[in-house]
Structure formats: C-alpha cells, structure tokens
Length: 207
Image (cartoon, rainbow, N blue to C red; front, side, top):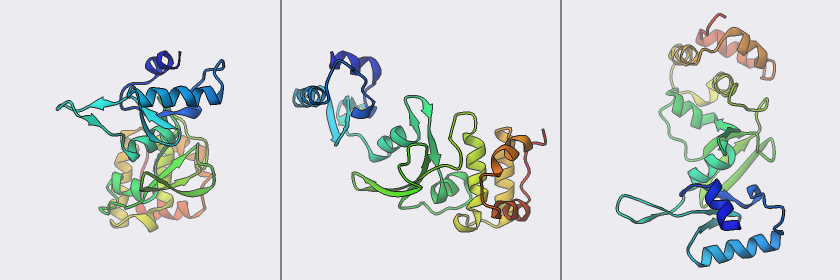
C-alpha cells in the first residue's frame, strides 16, 4: 500500500517528506515501520530524519545521492508543484546579477518558515529561512522578489545603484510587473524601500 502510494506520487530523486504522506488508514508507527522496511530492502533511500527518496541513476548507472539544495527547494520553495517560497537576501542579489558574491549561506523566504528568521542546517549545508511579507503564490512571487531586492539593495548589492536600477527595470519589464502590482504589496515593506526606488531610478510597467 505504501509502496504504491509513493510510486504514484513521487519520481526518482524527489524528496519524500513523511509529513506529506497522506494515508489515513496507516498509523504513524506503521508508517515508520514500512518506510524502514522499504529502506532496508533498497527500494527507497533515507536522506535524513523524515526525508526519503527513490534512488536515481546518472548516465553511468551510478546511484545519485540527494543534495541538501534539492531538499531545501522542495521543502521551502516549490512543494508538489505549488509555489511556497523563493531565494532572497544575498542569494537573490547574486542570482539577479546585483552582486557577484556567491553566499556561503543560502537565504530563502518561505510560507513554511517556522519563525520570522531561522537558521537551519540540512546535511551540513547552512540556510537562513525567513517569513514573507505576504503569503507567496505563483501569481505574486516575481513582484515579491522585485520588492525584496529593493528592500535589501544597500545591504546585498555590489553594483552601483544606477546599474541595479537598470537590472531591476529589465526584470520588471520581462515579468510585466506593473505599478498596480507594486502598490498592492509595497505597503507591507519598510518605508526605506521608497528611498531605494528613488535612488536606483527603477522603472516598471505603467499599467
């Protein structure tokens, strides 16, 4: 029963979080027993407490181990195809081209953050997890990342402010971020964000 459920809902190399398994007819104790049995039989692999996965082979036929970043993405950024988070802070600045520094500690903003700010470790990989200003959805994630960049620009960006403005203006144009979209969420951000908008000269779609 558990095997059939897992095969139906997960692909090789995708983290399986025990808290996401919904089998009402199976008790927690019974679930742990069958997960251990499947692991002992080599059907699934155990990554960490409460995290399993079906093994995936590389082009040489060797079994690939699950990475901490893959677990973090599935747990805090996109869970079962549902958007729940995004990279933020220094990580976002680097990915956006606002900074060339590759941060040692990845930063993530997620609906699943257990506290306003929480440091955590996944298999020796360090992360900083933050709660979002508003609940993250597929529809608003681009706007929230845009506003986060502006909020943190003095702290996280290496480029000159005018260069940052050009990068963010292109991002806004590419993602069709409008003034109405900005106005909907900007009230949830610190007042200093208006200073960043002015100093960078960032532009977004007027309507």
